[in-house]
Image 1 (spheres, rainbow, N blue to C red):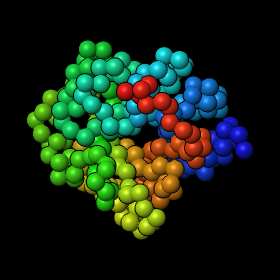
Image 2 (image 1 turned 45 degrees about the vertical axis):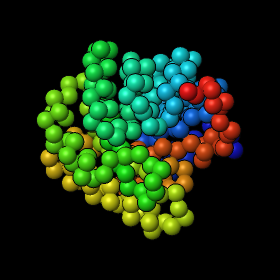
Image 3 (image 1 turned 135 degrees about the vertical axis):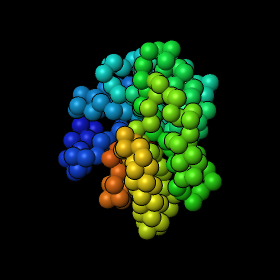
Image 4 (image 1 turned 60 degrees about the vertical axis):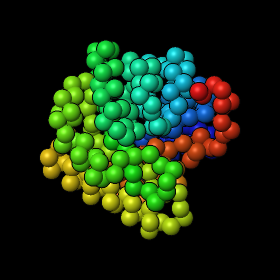
Length: 225
């Protein structure tokens, strides 16, 4: 099955409430164009340098999502065009996004990355930290960035009940936040290995790469720095 067939078949199985972000990290521009030609417009990258390179090469109506960890000193490079930053894990980063968005006379949508996994390798805010952030005076002062939802990654485990429990906890937390912040409604959960569980638990945005594109060796590290 070629990429067009894979994408078409994959999208047909998704509920109308769920958006697909095709994770194109390490994929060359020609593969992204192939996906683009099927009508896919949302693509996710986790390295700023790689995202910049692809932005320059590819159609301007692509909606680019930054899904990897973002350092504050890299925000300025993607602020002119990024559609959604899914990995906001601190007030400091959010304030820098706001600052750079203002410079570019844009509004940048963001998701707060919430730590739900039972692993130490994942970034993200705790539930308590996220609540404190959205209820802070600093949050209310932001003018050019808007938190529209939450993102979480489940543990890398074969235990489906654990994965389901972690996703469920994030859905419950979103509902808690929505009581006072109704505009925080997007829930980004689920990757190639667990998107079906994520959808069952309320995800509205899934990030899928290898299921669509297959596995690929990473681009030379020096190009990603």
